[in-house]
Length: 468
Image (tube, one colour):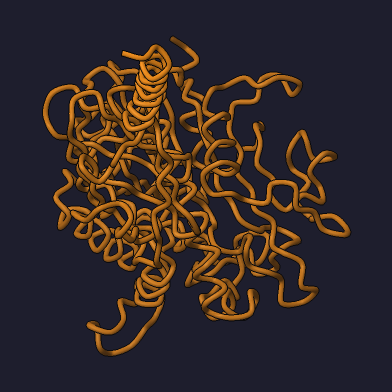
């Protein structure tokens, strides 16, 4: 055989072998996530995620995993996955995604068992959020409206906490029935041992959800009583739409949203009484011995407070067009120069990374509520979200027991003139923010922020009672 053809053939074989190796490696790098991962029981490229709702997904194939960005929460068997990553170990994973109502895009990273990854862009559409401003408005309107047809309006007004106030007693039974109807172990906590029947007694609604860890407890609440007639600074109110029917209804919506979720710690959802008379309701729950009071043999980790909701960003003032201030304070703030509590990290993460809030938005001027020790840094800041000592509501009760706390609050004092006055009505709230839709948007934002804080804080072991 001629040496030239033989040499040529050998050269071709080497080249082909080399090319075959390259092509082979390239083929191995190609992955098809749809073979192992589906959203809503369809392939990722065909899936559409409904914002604000739970969306089912399946993941199979040992070693395969998915990772989401902060604004897409993962739940497995009703439990939030804090690391935002799940990996198949043995059997198929059945889970759910939850996005905020403000989510505009969803990117999910699929990684196969060879550690080869691909970013999947999932389409989104508007869903019906598990807590939403429209439902909040409908229920608030029902509670604050008075008419002859009790199927159309509840008329749960005049909720002044006091001995023998039939209006308050009737409202408390209504709220208790709401939690009971959802399956919560619910109690009315009545305390009258303060010795002065002329002063307001305590009558709270306490709903309990059992956790997976029997050694800890946490909670969330808002006060359902309203400023009594003649109370400062505006003379008291009868409807109390903003202070605090708004927070009361938020708690009712949370109860429904949490039914199918699993929490680490035993969790109480509470409607407090006598907040306007000195936090007597939450103190009665926290410092008495009863079967449904705060257990003193478990670690109290954190508490989130909802008081005066809705007159806050993204709503704008009807007068000058400035956005209403949005206050969310974590605590206690023992040293103003350093972060003292881990729950502050959750507060920041939720607003900045999950809700994508414009944290540096400022107005040309200052707000009127200079009550916190960082006010000079925040007096013109729309999102007044930070660690602080601010009190004046039921979170103080639990902070005094060593719990880490978050207090959500909208405009007050100079930023909302109807505070503690007969003008604190739902109609006035609508007028002040420029319409019902704007009010619903602002309520939806703060309700989602607080809800996510509880879900995430529950799975944050670094959040501990400061007295431990």
